[in-house]
Image (cartoon, rainbow over all chains, first blue to last red; front, side, top):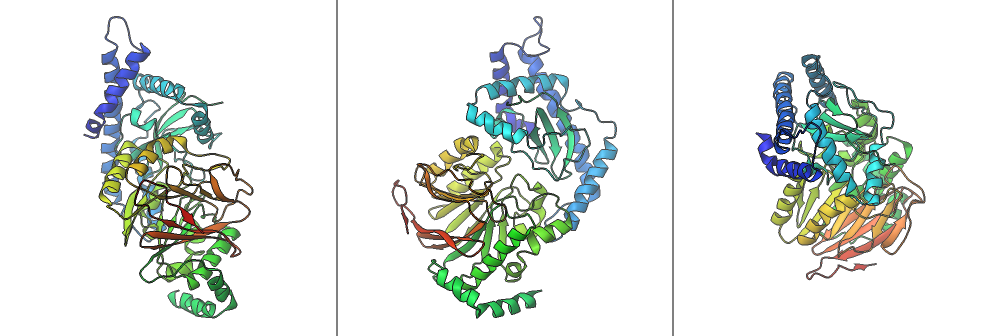
Length: 197
Length: 290
């Protein structure tokens, strides 16, 4: 399982949440540790389910190998995106970034941002604003005419590790999950990332 | 197509333009050396890209190199088949016909699916390494430097042995340009570069040419002006050795044993920087000779 490799991530998540004292959803009756682990597990389960589905669809679309033909690359990406979109026609925002997982991630990201010096925050802010008017949707093709904002490299190790076909992206205050080969947004989380003024 | 390139090459070989390029060449042209071109942020499909490409082809006549490294933003905007044609295949057609291989790194304007586009030699991966004689090139994806990539990089650097180790990637760790250096990347990458004896690093992203004074012994080049230009966007300071932002540029590099020769040329063929970097055997920064 891909998440096994990210065990350190869970520990960091737990430590971060413990430091913060409380994360949305924690109550006095429940240990603050378990709900966080549960939230992360919920997220990884959602990602696993997505990857299982899209890998099955990718098999039917056919493998993508190196080619001289950009036509083949573009057609394959389009076919995969279409197949995923049809199979996940009912998918909604929050299916993978569940509310509980979202609360954990947002807290963690906010805490991480607060540790960064102004110069780093400024660079991150510039990247976040590369798509100023973009409002993501589930099953939306990531706009191909815009750059893929650079993901803060020191934030990445703090988030659960993803399988190689999926990646995180930050656009404005959104944390996005993107299928790389299909160039498709499979879920997103609003207000996950501080907007640097 | 190949025939057309050969004819073009023959026509150019004896032309005053080629002779001029020979006159302007500062590289030693030694036998069995590693020779390559460096282009960054080139994939606009606009006139300036074609003019730079023409100049590279002109220099190729005097300085035949076997490969070119691309520092990202290989294809701006849409990446439809016709875009790849207009923004990559057409401008570099003579070089492609001459069997020059292009090794691309991914920039923030590049669809990661470019890794499946064979002429970019990414082998289906977002990051990879390749070896040319005594030089190991490490192609990084600085858009998404996840822990797996960092671990891979360390493993590759460890395994690379004693020759030149040359990482290249899109975002510069040192630059004086407007957007500034990528400090987060620097925090992660620089310790590895120092630990494993990296001496030369190439980046793009900023649409200028810049060579920094050795930073902790490492020579950093920013060469992201092979089509786009942010005119005047250098702020020479204590860390800048040479900055040039008045025209588009490309680089030519020749590695001869323990020396690396470089020459930076503008779209009009003017040399704006040149030098020699000798591999250090101790921890001291390698000096640049002019």
